[in-house]
Amino acid sequence: MKKIYYIKFLLLTALTGVVSCGPSPKKVVAQTWLNTNNVTTYYSPRFFNELMERKTTDNITVYEDDTATKGTSVAYVQQYVIATIDENLKKVETLSAKGDNKELIHASLEVFRYAKGIFETEYLDIAAMIDDERPSEDIMTAIDNLFGKYDGEMQARFDRLDSYAIPYAEKHDIPIKK
Image (cartoon, rainbow, N blue to C red; front, top):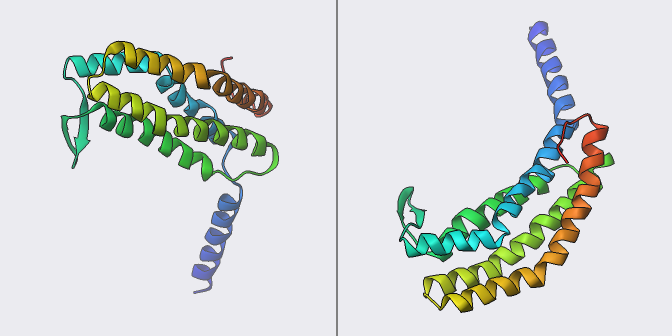
């Protein structure tokens, strides 16, 4: 009987040690820095060009009740852009910010939250314009205005994130491409 208690004690001690260590530096880099590729994938005029092409060819697919169906531009933005950014944001929010990763996590949260705000407002507005088949000149003007309004701040947030992510990765011997 003592053996069982001893084994349980050792397992509990080992698990406590694993839980209290926090995320590995590799996980921190992946979730805070690499996952921002999702932001840069969607934060682009090209995204809207592709969305307009999909609308023109009636090729917008969304999921309802786990079934692929024809959808709207708004539903596409909600399911593929906003849902992806929400998922990435939640992953960063669950990271334990301590020691040398605090600034990196904070900078990543700033990028995701800023992008989420844009995607939940202007992106949905432009997607609604596409669904309403507004003149392409109006849509292109809205796209140009969006990127003219937000590009500077978005780039500043990415630069700040890079200023923490690259040294953090190098410090922890995590190979990265600059």
